[in-house]
Length: 411
Length: 136
Image (cartoon, rainbow over all chains, first blue to last red; front, side, top):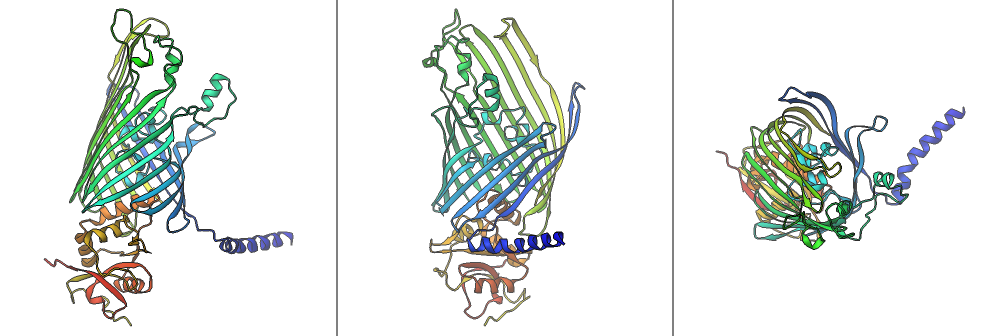
């Protein structure tokens, strides 16, 4: 009997909850999301380190509420790489949590954690149902986050953004400007190392990430230029090695510059981007040259570009070929240090996307993808080991064949 | 009273872009129409929210409408999917038949849709644009 009473009370409560929320004017929450599952086969041309792997590359769960015609709340949880806390695989992140106010198409204000606009792909890079790739252009591939510092190339988080467009005849000028934390966030790892017991997840500097994009849309042609500016404080760890005065490398300015283009011409499409990252560590920061040399050098500049040419074979089938290149390094010749470390990654890839359509105007619920990539990696280190003081001269050029098949599901 | 010519596909070779009688305009340019259907514009001159309707299935009417806008079906789906996943808006509500579109436009303040012109008679909706169907 008590069990029956319990069930009845639960039913009454369940029936009453919507009314109670209705009385308070609570808005319904839309819940949806998407995930991408893939199988990837990697073959090293030297015959070493071949790998096969199934993976839930990414899962995003989105909660959204239209608070009114102009106000909208949006939360996006992101799960990567077969996340398992017990096995310490992958990651689970609060990717976005924001509220927006849309005055009109000319002005939308967003407040809260979000992925800011930078070039064509950054703010949609984790929307896997939109993209034809199993593996995205590598500085946008979230599942590579454990091995590649994506945030070096593109801004990952901002907290306030204004965005909109201004009509000019039949063209539109797009704009976006945003503000966020500089990347100097205190993490649990730092606290463990330093033995500090301070609050994590907060910016430890008084500087901000400031960025934006200015673009032009005309029919199916889109052009844009992007920029971000912030300061980083991780150079202070090498002040003594490079002979710089204490505190002189506390806040090194970092600039990302980007350009993007895309167009659709009947069944043909193209999109491409360039990203250049520059650290401003010129002599005003107090670097001392190496003995016998005129100028000190500390260079962490990076470059990335990609271009994808696609063709719609029919409404369901899309084929593409793409080229990606990144160049990053660590060139340090100052004080007692003399080290040149370089990493080039070049990818030639092609693939197919097949969409299973629910109906003509509904969304593509299921997208099948297949991709082949030939990856050329150039790694070299030359100079003096800053820790052991020994000469070092290493060079490797691995070549990889990658084959990936995947399915992206919108639910 | 709506006089409906449901199912007629050859009676007229024109598509009518229709709106609720209460909308504050009597015509639309192609750019304005495209802005409504891509979500760039979401209100009638800032006065009233626009509610956009679509047809579910491909056919001469729907094809002519999107051809007039200069977009393919797959491109429109991609635009709406991007908006949805970015939290910028919802896709148009879509209906199986032109009769349903006509009825919903007539009964929904701020509504915008498209049907074959022969489907429309009487004055329950405004016709804002007429598009010729290329039957070649």
